[in-house]
Image (cartoon, rainbow, N blue to C red):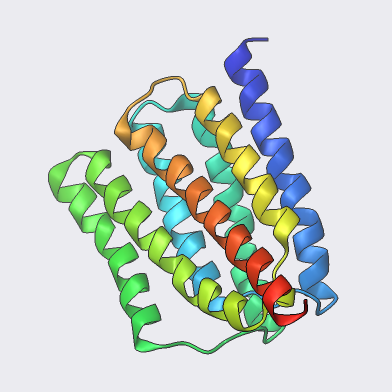
Length: 193
């Protein structure tokens, strides 16, 4: 078993370790994910997975593919559970930008442009969640975002080929998760000292 396969397996395991309690928390009504953030994240993650495969990310792309499938499920769960379904015109803009990456990728025949656009859109998708987390810091799950940071580190280590197209997305998402953890931690202390 190669090291890349082990790193990919660890990243996939961390994906499940992060998502299973998160999904349970959503089902219990404790965590209330913002619907459109998860729609955007599901869309971007699914497309990035295919772009990473085309950019020769190999088994290092698998954790992103698993994450994309589960993220799309959480978007559906957020809708069914009627979590936070407030959708602004900015949310629609982010979603349309995510979809716009497909023709960009098709016409340039280069997955890098799709990954750059999708990474930006994915990061913008944190906007509604950060807004909600600032106002309601106890409705977010800090361990989930910490596990995602670790998952992305292992996904990067598992990549078979390193390029901007393969590294940009997991590295950027890790940074956004860290920012969200800092905001939620700060707001929990400020709101309920």
